[in-house]
Image (cartoon, rainbow, N blue to C red; front, side):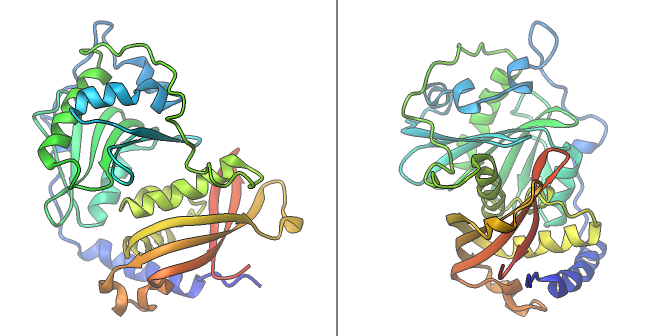
Length: 323
């Protein structure tokens, strides 16, 4: 029997409603009159390459990003799912600048961040519609360059030590000029040896696309983007979505160590199960949760993920402590 955390989910759903009802409201200039106007190229529209990107690491090569950032990029690592095109530009073995091109609803991304207590601001230094997500500690969590109501390019960092606040904003301003066509983007060149799938070490897995979904899901949780992680789930109930977001926000860090097919003899065309081994660091503040740490613990954690195909797209259908 699957031991899903349903009891905790129901409890957390109630808590989630309380959080929504009691959180401090943060004004968002982005949604008010007088927002910045998108700078466009000579054709009068945002560069089509960024609206129809298929390989972000190849569209924006490590050499081009190095020039815009003013730092050396040693390698890149790409990830593509049904909506997301992401590339990590590594400055060293562990620290990276992360650029995403996604087709999720922009307003919902803002709302998700605000539910986590983050402040939304607009930067006058970035010459197109944009908003910065500010953490409670005053650091930038993510920068969004808005291409439309359901399309954006976002910028993140694996560490604020390698790239400062001023540097990431300056980079976003330059990237905005590239995105809007003010700075011509040179034709993409082959990046042999630089692009590695985030599921590359899982060569024995039966479906690379499903592996990428698992890696992407936990990378969003690790990047403190729980609302986007929830968007990758097949959960439709708003209370359940909020409960999962609260739970994911209580995880300080999470890294995928292994993804292994589980009980393949029970698989159906639209439903597969994987055993996922994770290295987790929990937020000490979650010790007082109705379920301490929401069932997670520091160090090694094993979860069984059920993937469901919904309208041709693989979604996370369930997270269980056993098969």
